[in-house]
Image 1 (cartoon, helix red, strand yellow):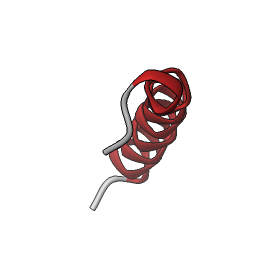
Image 2: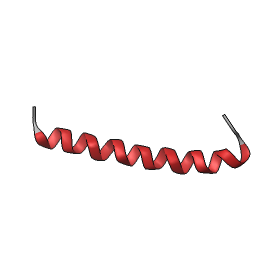
Image 3: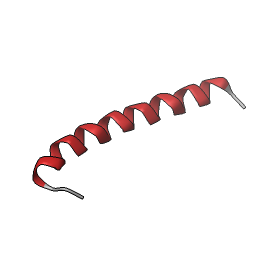
Image 4: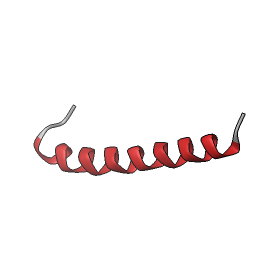
Length: 33
């Protein structure tokens, strides 16, 4: 296992999570799942 890959994966997961929260926040007002 390479630490670099795990580190990058964690960063990518956080980035996607933040983007998901932003999109969800915008969609919540107009469209509720």
